[in-house]
Image (cartoon, rainbow, N blue to C red; front, top):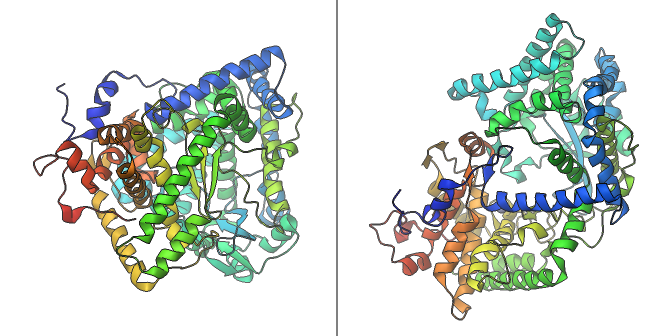
Length: 632
Ligand SMILES: [Zn+2]
């Protein structure tokens, strides 16, 4: 294949050759960039877990208990001998519930186990006043990854996926004591119930505007819409009081709730919940059930093979004990020195961001001041936390119990704890991501940014890379996370993370115009695996745009800045080879643009791109100056 020109396709110029020969691991949907770093983290920690297991010595009690879980999962002989039994035993209590009043009597327990319910309830920081907690209500998940799959134009794909899912569910049901007739009925009812859910809940695109999930409603109103659920009693059971308002994340769902859950539909619900739980629990059961139960998820992402036992044991235990494992990882593999270096870089980027806002030719003084206040108050969480969250002390379980019982004990402790803090001020010291995760995030209710240790590695960051490379890598990612404070969602929240309109009317109008332009820049782009939805990915694109704008600005002040290195590393961090099934899935559910577009779209909004590589109107990565967008 002839090498592409950088002016036509930055992504493939940088990554194309590697992608051609790269092999996607059998148990993963992707390779390259983020995925390779994640595999490296996994390999290191798996080696450490193995050593801890064999030597029976642990850096702390949290890791000891993580290894307890690891050992329980690795005990294949026992899991295989138990087969489906732990799940049937767990579900037997639910099977005795035969009507709505019995359902109501058991509701608290079901909520605490995170059981499949016709609605979901949870305790979170109140978006309008983040110094308080609130109770929110939303709908359950659909079987297909997104409600758009239920639309008529997706009928072919829907039928194929429902077919895959049904085969999987049927194979799991065949292991129960239900008769073949009952199995068929359970399956049919499950699909019927799921169809109703799909008409009521939000699509990924609707969820992507997360500030629209904040709809305070009088508790009386919510109780009446949730009838026949005894919601008031549930609130008393969970938090010991009935708050005046409840946050309704999905108003359409609540309005239609009566069509989903009623005496007539109770059996539909019951069968749906039973099947969904059973399928979900297979990961804690025997190897054959784990294989069957994971088949649908693997097919959705094009994953060829089930994860092997030891890796799965590591993945599951490190997910349940994510913060202690992340802290261990950070201390061992990252260390204090790199932490200090990166914090300096973040401070520099925030300072430059403030300068850009203060010099903005379009924003009024008033709006500028509010945006700068938000930047001044932004909290930086870098690498890993100083100490483990107290919740992990509450994970009490018998290491000799079945994997399923251990997992449920931990889930219960986690959910119970979230309600126990209802009356307290939400803890802003909590970390949104563990240290061993290759990712980064902005939390709008805390106005903080989190960079786990695992992402602070090449190609994102290294003391050995040039400053220009680091700016095109981690620098642009840091700028991206900061920009989430000012994307189409974050811009609705103030310096304390409260939903609060701090814009002047005129400025907000201009901001909305650039949001619209960003939607248009991406919307409808055709890729081999489908069409891009500009609305779904707009906030992430605004963040990428902001990240590039601020780091290119810093490049200007950098002696010997090397723009080639900057843009090439920008493309390198998005290097990915993925299964087509996975690409198609992401196009429907992921709020981020496909990697090739992240690499290739934003540079063309900036003059530096054109100057560095002499890009002209004859090149594919050219857009006319009037079409270039810089949001922040
Ligand atoms: Zn983002």
